[in-house]
Image (cartoon, rainbow, N blue to C red):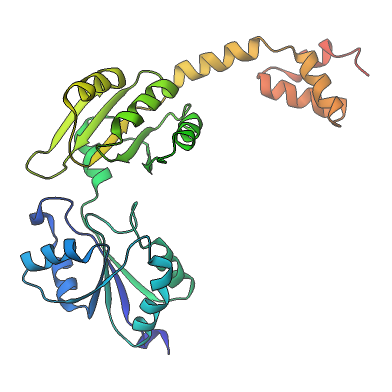
Length: 285
């Protein structure tokens, strides 16, 4: 079948809480497609009933995604138009659909994105925290070992970090972050766009104390300030000052590097003129 005769996959953003956040284009798309791929058909049915839309649905979630790709491709090959939705927000962002879209892109199928509200953007805009540059980390691992490992990798990240977290896990996550990252300013964004929407601008230690005392409910977007760039540079400088250029050159030479290249590399790492390092290493063979 030629590309022109294939159906289109519409990736449709849906509300994250307040049903009024559905876009006119999303409504038109859901009304016009032949069927809908839904992360949870029960959840999507609530939205369709609210919109007075009756449409066939196929369950499409992270546990059956790999098995359903061939089915979806077959439907598109028949000329059927298909909408992909998640339970809330934009599909694929910490939700199913990445594998399908990747396959369709690689095989030149038609894809249209119908933009909608996204929890991470909603949260950082309202939080008041630095949004100039940020990184989205999604959900951390449920394994403490893997969670700590990832946080260690993020320890020197200077951009604002955004995480998704469930209420029953948030306390463990905050304690691990406090242990690895040290005290930071954070914003706990809860129940976005819903009746009990809340933004808590606080710190790790204060949040831990409050949640241990009062508990917390609702899905959470956690925003964490990045590492202080000035402090990182000062720490790096202090660490470099402790290093012995001669020992560093010796180490590189013992690993197989010639003396000239070793001196150049050490000078670059220490941020000094290579002639200064050369003078200290003049007696090295």
